[in-house]
Length: 590
Image (cartoon, rainbow, N blue to C red; front, side, top):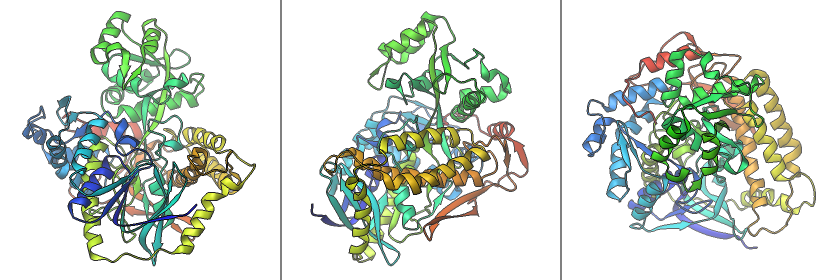
């Protein structure tokens, strides 16, 4: 099967919000732009699944004609995000986020995005509402769009990016993209965990490809887990409907002993940890501690049950979700279960990744010609996402598209190293040539289970070390034995999964080593053996870079502007109260 070669100025990888916005901006700047997506552009990845809210300071939202809090300001919003991010935020990136959020939201409104309702710091729409508006705009520019193309590796020459290699999922054909600049907007790596609240395409392809050519990854230990996600029965696995219900209507969380386990915590912590965006971290940690204490449900979670009479509860739910339908899925059977007084099983699920490819204010990485935006890049949220990633993807997508276009206008395209291409292709084809060994689905399930248990909402020294040893064993012993049932490359999803597993194993090992290195609890990173936040010794970014084929780890100071970090050391939940006390009490921690 011949290899196709396509030349462009800018290659954008990822068909969600960040990729679409980057491609629009590159197209505006009159450079040849190609947008490729592992699934269907605008209909796959995280954006499609988003709730979705778009956040900005309340005064700016009021100026746009919405409900926003008029006494709010960009400065107050900035301060709140730093506080809730436990001061791990890159404040230069955060300032860009805060300053540009209203502009990017106004664009979407101008492009026809519908808004359902608004709060003090948020507009609520849908993931498809966002992507549809972006797709309407991109039609104005000469952007070529390619669906079902998985970018597997970046191509380099003399330390600079010169393109990428991809696999057409439908045909199995390799495609070489020769490009002056590459923008990675490929999303998170949710599929490394089970359960997770993401889509099947999100396997960290961009982060892993960037790492393999020497790009820096930062704060990879920071993973947000959404609490109260359905884990049983399997047909509902990963749905956040119960998480939404817990915010909309009263419900109790109990362990396998029937105990309302949140009652054991400080009432002030519980109030904050159940009524604000902190609910994801607090309830996820509390739920996982019950499981680890032997009080979990049969499927590794806790029980979710209504806390009010049946009729009142149903009225609360139906007010927002007629017919018990959420995102097109019929949950009426679950409704009957809850109305009868029986519980359903819920638990934490991987939802968002604060860490990622290190970028500067222009979305440049440390590799010439490589840019990143959206969830695959280092976020401005520090140790806890409390504002919209949908706004983040738009802000930094625009910057990445403009920066890459300007770069492409200045340089001539580098030549592709054919030997590098042949070497990468041969590695990917190996599983197709084997007749026996290890099945990818079995290996994936094994890794996902361990990731949830050892690198989930609660971590500790022994668990992390055990997981790292197992990942090293898997990488050396099991991964080279992966094989597929069919040797055909045409729409062979089992083969694609072997390529994805290479990325998943790599990123889990990196994240576990970073979690082991961070000997404290901060934001979404909770160490049961270090249950305190250490401002004096641990308030650093953890940077991981490949050196001679192995991860080299280092620390660097956080980037500050106006917000000076506190000092000392506090028990984790006291730190939570401290940061929330400094919060402005203006809504919108989304």
